[in-house]
Structure formats: C-alpha cells, structure tokens
Image (cartoon, rainbow, N blue to C red; front, side, top):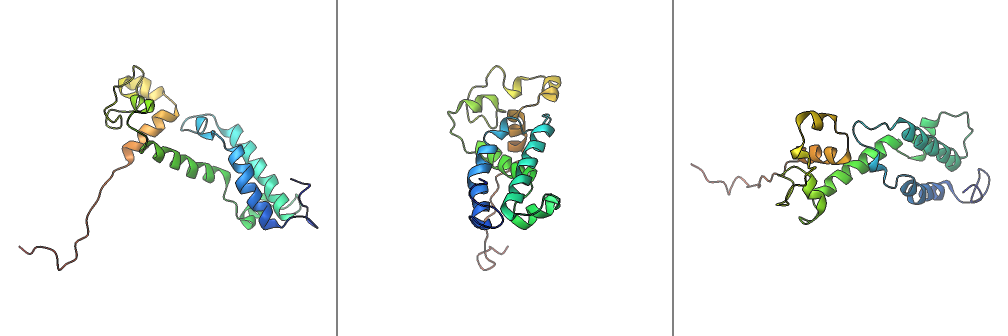
Length: 165
C-alpha cells in the first residue's frame, strides 16, 4: 500500500480511505465474530486491530507519527474499530432471525427460536443453570439477542377511520 501513495504523490487520501475500507477491513475482520462475544478474552486481538487502523489513518493522511491517533482517525472519517465490530456483530445477530427453519443452528437455540426444529442434545435450553452461567459462546449471545427482539406492529389508523364508541 505504501507504494500506491505517500504524503507528496500517488493516490488521493479519499482513494486511500476507500482502499482501506473496502479491501483491508473486510480481510482483517473476517470471522471476527468467532472470538468477539461476551466474556471472551479479546483485549489482545482488539489492540492489534487498533494498531492496524492507526497505521492506516496515518498512511491515509500522511500525518506525523507523533500526532494523536484518535484525532487522525476522526479526521479521516474512520469510526473506532470496537464500534465497527459492535455494528457488524449486531447485524450478525439479527441475521440469525432470518435463517431458514431447516438450518442446523436452530437446533442449538431456545425452543421459541428453533422454528419447530428438534433440539440438539447440547442445545442451550437443555443446559443446567450453572452450565448456562458458565457458557461463553456466540450461540449464547445470539439466543440472548433474539430474546430481546420483539416483533410488533401497531397499525396506524387516521382519526377519521377510528370507530367512535
């Protein structure tokens, strides 16, 4: 990437940012949801990703290395990597709500999310309270997130269509 541009010549900073957002971030965050869940030891991985994004921000702007990295990232328009991962993780959890009813993941979820799929012998609903408390996995997080989602629809009726009693 350094061959493509530096602070005096090469591609524009807008193009550098586009390159980072479309090529580097998807590769760096590929399957991050396997280790980014509640209770996982993730500090080391997040620190590595923060260093990567800091280097990218300095490359994009051509700023000096002694500049404050958070400010440079804000100038470039990059959100903090932890917030970006939370955003992607939220989309990942919501995607579970729309998987096919025949998908094998449904057998690991609670019965209300299983979509008439027979529960697996290691399903979260079959675990004891102690086992559920000690369990740290993406499936547990998906289950909790799906329990928090409520599908509701309140139709809007204009005042002239409402029935007066």
